[in-house]
View 1: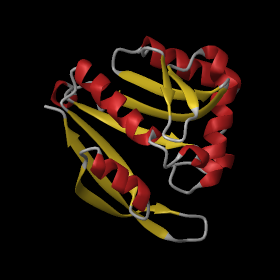
View 2 (view 1 turned 90 degrees about the vertical axis):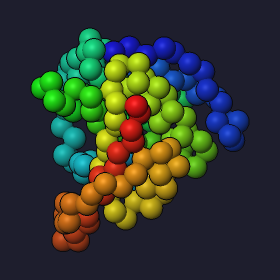
View 3 (view 1 turned 90 degrees about the horizontal axis):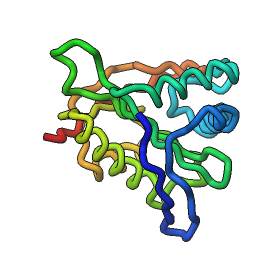
Length: 183
């Protein structure tokens, strides 16, 4: 689903553009995903696991734009993608249609300036418009900043998966599952 383009100003005065990623953005989207995966272990992939080709990334972008059940909110600083969040239907079965998954990642240089809060607000509003009644996410238990952001946005912990993530050094980290009811 395509979202409405919007100019935003961060607390620190930086001016960015929030819009749907388009096929022309495939290269910067891949660079953004690799960079955010290098900056923290809080994402599901290590940088070397990101093996999408440019054409595969274009296909992913096309499928999101064509979908009635998913949307990406991508933040651009000039032509460079620096943040993204997504909502997507949990499942197509009738019993799941009220639920959507939520995910967010920002380059570290764009954290702590209100961008995460803004993206969550936009995603929640869009999720309501799309007819979802609840948003769900998973977060690393050691991601204190992320957890605080989600709680501030109205998400609450409803479960925990022990040892959900195993890092390269052998460290295990629990996954906290969180939900925000929209209706």
